[in-house]
Image 1 (cartoon, rainbow, N blue to C red):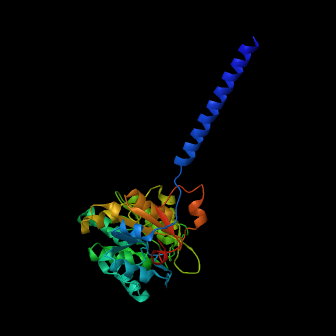
Image 2 (image 1 turned 120 degrees about the vertical axis):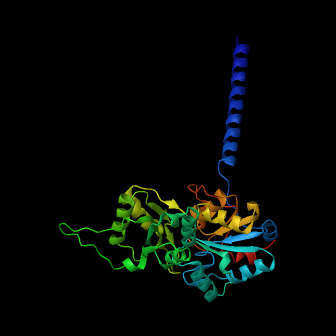
Image 3 (image 1 turned 180 degrees about the vertical axis):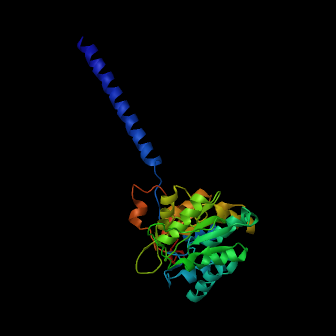
Length: 333
C-alpha cells in the first residue's frame, strides 16, 4: 500500500514538474514572440547596403523649427554620393513644395523640388485623382497658404485659409453664417489662425452640402514648429471638425498610403523593401513605413523619446532607431 502511495505521489510529482516545465516553456514563448524589441542601429554599412531609397520626414528629422539638425546636411550629401535616392515626405501642410524648396535652400540642405512631398500636395493630388475638378465644386480651406498654392496648380477653386483669420460670427438673436452651397470639399490642415468662424463654416458645408468631402492633411497631435517646444498640431483642428459633424475625414498624409503610392508609380519603384522611412513620430512616420512595406528608422531628435519607444504601452516598433540622422555618419561597424 505504501509502495502504491509512493508511486502515485511520484507520478503526481512528475506530472506537476512536466506541467510546470510546459507552463514555463509557454511563458517563455509568449515573452519572446509577443513583442519585438526596438534596437539601436549598430552596423551602419550593413544598414546602408540594404537600402536604395531614403524617405525623410522633415520636422524633427532634418530641422527643428527653423534650425537645421546637426549633421543633416552632411548625411544627405553622403547618401547622394553613395548613390542613394532621396525623398522628403512631410505631414506639414503650411507650405507648398515650392515653399519647402526655399526652406531647404535657406538651411543648406540639398533638395530638388521633385523630391519634396507635402501633405498639402497630397490633398491636391487626392482631388486630382478623384476628378474633383469635373464636379465644378469649390474647396473650403482651413489651413495655410501651402494648401491653396497646390490647389492653384491644378486649377481647383478654393477660398478660406488666411482670408478668414480675423472673422468672428455675430451670434445675437437671428444671426447666422451664410455658407456657399457649391463647396464640395473641406480640407483641414494646420492653421495657426484657427477660429470659431472657420469651425462653423466648415460644419455648415459638411452637414448641409450633399456629398461634401472632409479631407485631413494629417492627424499629428503635436510637432516642432519651433526648436523651443512642441506645439499643438493639426489633430486639434481636425478633432474640432469631427466633433461638430460626427464624420471621419479622408486622411491623405502619413500614415495613409497616398504619398508612397504616388512616389512608387511616378518613379517606377517596385521593391519597397529597399526603401527606408526615417522619421521622428511612431504613429505617422514609422506606421507609414510598416503599413506600406518599407524599412523603418526612428530618430529621437523630434517628438518621440527613447522612454516612450521602449515602453510596454508602445506597440509600433521600428526596424532600428538612432539619436538623430547624424548617426548615419557616426555609427561604427
